[in-house]
Length: 258
Image (cartoon, rainbow, N blue to C red; front, side, top):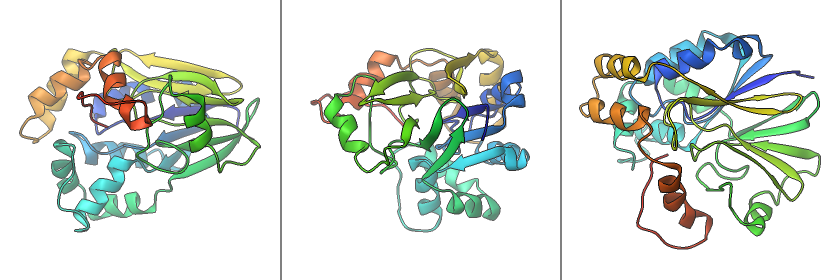
């Protein structure tokens, strides 16, 4: 049984943000580092994958919708991806990167001291694109958790880039937020599990990171991309308004990228 797990979600190919989190003492000493998807779709996808694979078996991987989309694009199963940076990111991946993405599971269960059986996934346990939010109604949570075993008392997910912890029908739900594309406030967001839950934010030099990403990526719109996402110019209110209709609550014209 594991004692401590660090959860990193939605890295989105941002190397300096990932490096800052991996340097945290609690991450370095954790029994396992769990990645809950959307690892690659961003400005430095190959560098991020290479760094993570160098950590060996300490890392447990889960695929996100963006990782699946990059793989499908490279394999000719789709000719477009909604996220503008994603087709470019897909073309940066080597054959071994594609093989890694193809092997990733959609979910993972671990036994964690003080928390029992914990299920890790990207969006929901049944789908890598579904949206659930901190204020999603209880019947929505009942719907997306309907096929889970009763012994799963904690679900850890990502996808919406906003950290939260809440109870839903007796289950604890944890979203660590996004390492590389935070909504609401800047910094690299992650979570530490065992025996409880801690939502963490790693502050790093955003100006230096923007310069590093801009210089180290050949994506044509990299300066605008880095300025927008690393500064977290999308507020939590913007993101909730954009994602809200996707959990069935109504209509809005706002948009956000995951």
